[in-house]
Image (cartoon, rainbow, N blue to C red; front, side, top):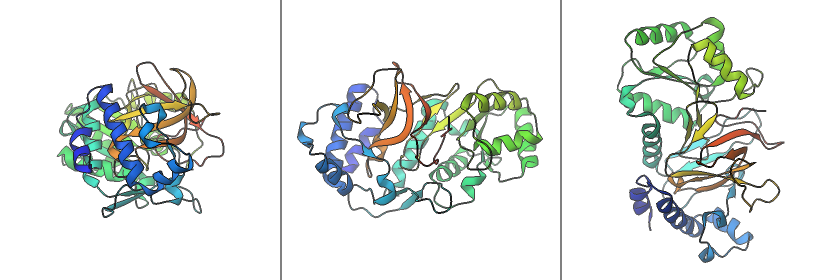
Length: 329
């Protein structure tokens, strides 16, 4: 298949057999058309034609995005997304030749879990991301703000008074709200306000970005549930190197849209996979990433459950802290 054929099929996946079939086709395409991935496969001495199962596919280490231009094909690059990082830290670069597929991925992914975006006023509290260039999260939230169609939707940098005034006014109208915020900014907001929200979904995107001490998820979400007066804190699992996101509606348990899958590898043997409930390294299949690499071995630690939901429990030692929803344990 070619890219156009992949695009017509990826977002129509509705069962595991179709996912497997398309994933294997994407693998063969990228093994041929992605120079970096091709070299990685050759180094491992893997015969592409013999790959018949998902657990036989080699997953490329995510670190390659820091040192190589990971692209499939020769199409013009439209966007370059950069990972966050402290001064002097080498950033990951995701070269995106098709922003349309990214937009379709995050819109369909959101709608898969939450319904029509036009039902929500979308509020972004993402100061650390707004203060730098190249954030894929800002690209997504900015587009969701526009697609919401509500004049009240928008970003807030440090104007908490105006943000809370807007939220209270919308709550009084019983308007559904999506508040997407980085953890330290949500904590800063709660330093000044205690709220009792009924129509607002709080979605934290992780990380203190060096602004506050790191907390385990349970402690952080307890503060948020009490401060915002909500029952559950939602989360987004995504990263610079991906074009799809997993979502959690509470308790740190994430689910993927049908074109994305999480597998957990043995930390001692990257080519072995662990059974449900056991902890290991997170591998991601993101079929929306067809123009780059869809098979990525991350530096996150987690576990996958029998129903294919998953949990992120930390990171490998000595790996840099960056990306979305990485709470250090």
